[in-house]
Structure formats: structure tokens, C-alpha cells
Amino acid sequence: MTKMAAGWQARTAFATIGGGRRAVKGACMVEFLRNEDGQGLVEYALIIAVIAITVILAMVFFKDQLSNYFSNIGNNLT
Image 1 (spheres, rainbow, N blue to C red):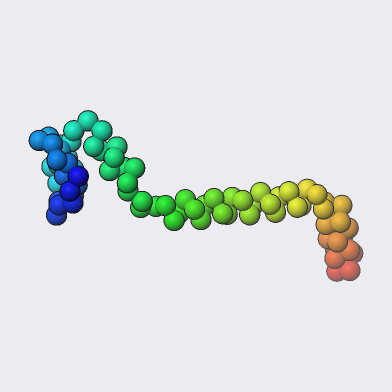
Image 2 (cartoon, helix red, strand yellow; image 1 turned 90 degrees about the vertical axis):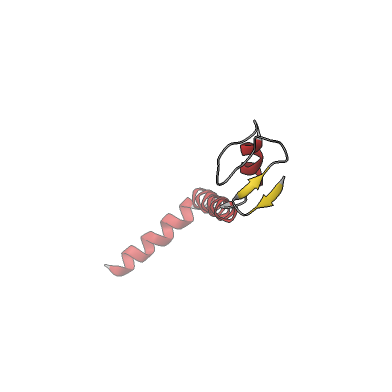
């Protein structure tokens, strides 16, 4: 494949992706797999998911200590 001004163009007779949207079977899939737009967003989402799971597991593991801590805070406020 060669990079042209209108997009990707395969070396066969039928493929013009980008401007003309005609493509050889599988050429669109190749462009999709090479496209890395949004990769950073997915990585940040995975990091946030791992952090959320870690916090939830920590809260489950330390639930008695957290309950006592927040009860003491509530009792001191009244």
C-alpha cells in the first residue's frame, strides 16, 4: 500500500480508500487495524478500571476498619 493525498491506496486495480471508498476485499480491515486513533483513550480507560477494581477490593478487605473510622467521625460531629 502507498500513502496518497486522499488516503490509502492499494497496489491492485480496485482499491482507493479515503476519497473514493472502493476497496479490494480486506483492504478496509487492514486500514482499520493500522489506525491507532483512540488508542490512548482505551489505555486510560483500562488504567481507570484497574484503579477502580483495586479501590473496591481494598474497601471490601478493610470494611470493618472503615466502618469504625467513619462511625468515630460521625460520633465526634454530634
